[in-house]
Amino acid sequence: MITMRGVYALTGVVLAAAVYWFLLRSVPNPTPIQNFSAPFVYGHFRVPVNNPLSEEGVQLGRMLFYDPRLSGDNTVSCSTCHMQHLAFTDGKTRAVGVSGKTLEFNSMSLSNLMWGPRHFFWNGRAASLEEQALVPIQNLDEMNQDMDELLEELSADDTYPALFARAYGRISPENIAKAIASFERTLVSADSRYDSFLRGEIKLSSEEERGRKLFMAHPDVKVSLRGANCIDCHSQFLTSGFNAFYDGFTNNGLDEEASLQPGLQEVTGKRSDRGKFKVPTLRNIALTAPYMHDGRFATLDQVLDHYNEGISVSSTISPLILEADNGQANGVASDASLHLSEDEKRAIIAFLHTFTDQHFIAAEQFSNPFEQ
Amino acid sequence: MTRRRIVLLGATTSLGLAVSSFIYRSMQPAAIHLHFTAVVGNKVLVYDDHVYANPGGRGVFSVRDFQMYLSNIQLVGAAGTYSVPDSYHLARFDNGSNSYEILIDAVPRDTYSRVMLSIGLDQKANESIASVGDLDPNGRMAWNWEVGYKFVLFEGSLLVDGELRPLVYHVGFSENRRKLEFDLPEPALVWSSKGLAFEVDLAALFAGNQVIDMQALSNVKFDREDASLLANNYASMVSLWSTQ
Image (cartoon, rainbow over all chains, first blue to last red; front, top):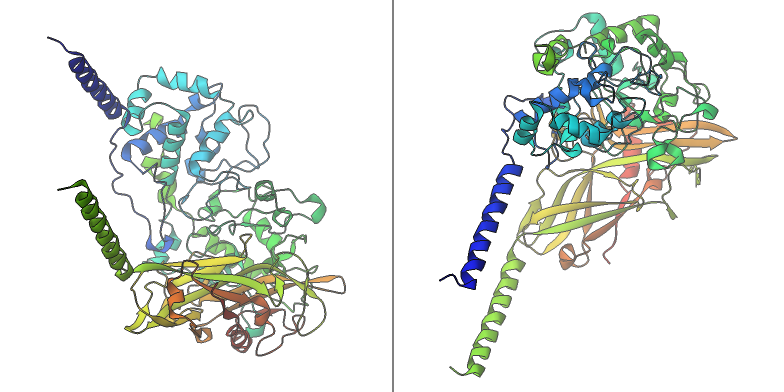
């Protein structure tokens, strides 16, 4: 005879089984990433606890990164502005998306993103790569994609549902962001001539070595030390901005007070952060022209000329830029110049070329998976 | 067994368990806190405002950035000296509360009567590119790989007669490590929930052993005499302030 107790018990078992089945189905068990390594000199890196690097996540992220269906009219993918052969930049002064309008900022190179500043975009408005990834997709001028439509498109695809199921579970904006961020975290550039030098495998040419020493020194006339003070903002091995708090954001003397753009001030609300922008990595810098957040300099020569004799003084400019001088400094802020010689500028540019990583820009695992 | 006996037995057992757990816990290693608050002389530390008088000359100065390495924390107790492992701490105060806290886990229980710590780094750490504690060769305090780390970083500006002068004081070099010692008035204070409170006086950097005219000496970087001048000043920068 079936008692009520029996009915309750049976219902309980069925419910438990359903929950178990649902959990099994919705919590995939992806493969931890294999063969991933980074140089000792880059230091520790952190991956968000809720988005560990997995083979499936990275593979999915790579497809999404290169898939133009992420844009509203299916013409623009992340890779439109972040092209591998240009170290994931686009060669344009400022980015252009689906609207055809020239956008506000230069497309930033993507490499070694697990180190350096932990805030993304030129003004630091995204606190993680996951947060960053969804912004251009939905921006009207960049990719202009409606998120619900994108979820429908991906769900109707032959391959994406299974890929999502294996990597993260369901197709959702959060999981799209996780996948793209995972792929981006694998974009490690660490095989340039500078890296070979750091590993003790090669010597730099005498000009490159001279450039390295200038790059790595803040000048001090008192002890006859010449320097280009690059290291004051670009860390010695990563060559990116610093990772602590907003230390990786600076005002590098591009504009005078009246024309300072808000920059980091938009994020922190502090007047003292006006005109500060993210210090980018200099890895592959010879491939990523034009330069600065608004792409105002077409060549590295122009960049060096800016730092050497083109500084605009404002209230939030870095005191390290104002103070650095290889000549007879008079100590007054309004008179900022590095006083490097033409030879010294050339040597620094020669050193900057040692950051070019041919393996990075040719690596198959970073390339367009739809063109294989 | 009567109900009263059961209750009595239960109460005795619970009390016994509580007491032994308390004793057990009080013998186990525990965390301690070192709390540092930054001031400028008798004023509160504010950033980016020309409100502090140049101690040795004319004009007023502002603080834009201040960071310093504290290292090699040791606790001298009845049973011996406990050296905190990987003790490299980058102190900064630009957080709204002008304070910096060091949390040290798993400190062995002892009656500690003295705390020792250094401003700056030991030579081995200063010459290393390993990321230990807060040491970071890609960080802002890295000078470069041949010179080691800045121990104390002060950046700001001096306003004299309407003209701004950048101030850059980067003090490093292994010889400028300064070892500090503090006798604790009450040994138990190490274990108090609020921890040990220290004060860091930025003014001491320019008005300690030697009073500095920031206009005449507006930057200190690689000149060893200038660097040791500031190091002798910062040796008196930290004081055990209060334990409340």
